[in-house]
Image (cartoon, rainbow, N blue to C red; front, top):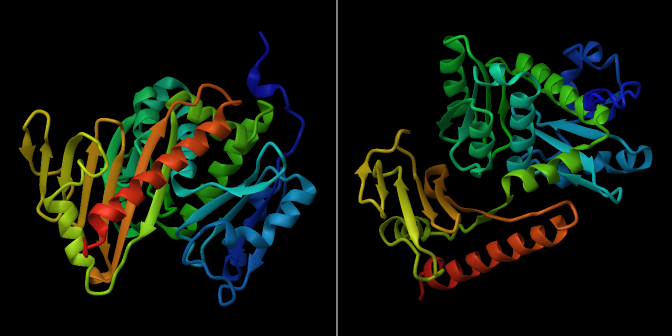
Length: 349
């Protein structure tokens, strides 16, 4: 039987590493010497890296399309966060959101080696990431740990696992991918991980896009949306409304669990079980419903900002059904946020 890993053995992967100018001291040429990868540096003073999204990688889009590159990998100026750009089946340049990126890298992290090795690996997941990560970890029988989101929180969780001499990948919905505590070492390890993943995909005559779609087929298609619902002088009231009166009726959903990290209380509405959540206090409440919908409401920056995170999933039967499934989950999440806006977020109601 043909080895699927070796069907495209001879082709070198192509791509761009997009890094802040000060990263030219990292001696990255050795990492890319066996590939057709170019390193491009940007001036941190001229590039907005607050949000790692399509706009951040836009300066690389034309080169990616013209040369048909396998990937673009960008890092913020602090080298703490990363983002992957790719071409879809029609040659359009797109970027993975943090949830999609985490799923791809966790899957590769656990499946690139033998199943026995995967069982000895640990994945630390930021608790706002979608449950697709959980499913990938469970399927590969790896160890699962949860963390609050943010670089410092993830790094502390990673450090704890590394002290036990474990092989660990930590990720969250802020584009943090951590394999090492030191930022420079972590940057190099993240680049190596992406190069290994893309090389493996190319050898299988696949791509980032096709692998992304295949994961949605295998684990259901997950959709995630984040909305800034900050309103001056109203943030705490809106936050408390989600905590004290979960909006199950307004969105026609049956509530299963409430994780109120501010009050440090977990409650299963179906079984009646109550107790403290595993993680410590934070201005965060998470609601999970029987349909699979997950709502996370996060109060940050001393209460000056309020974010609404939505996650849900839908069946995606094959690659052909992917576009329609993606549209359906997108529409479903927008419908939820519209209902929440009418019944919960708008305090004038």
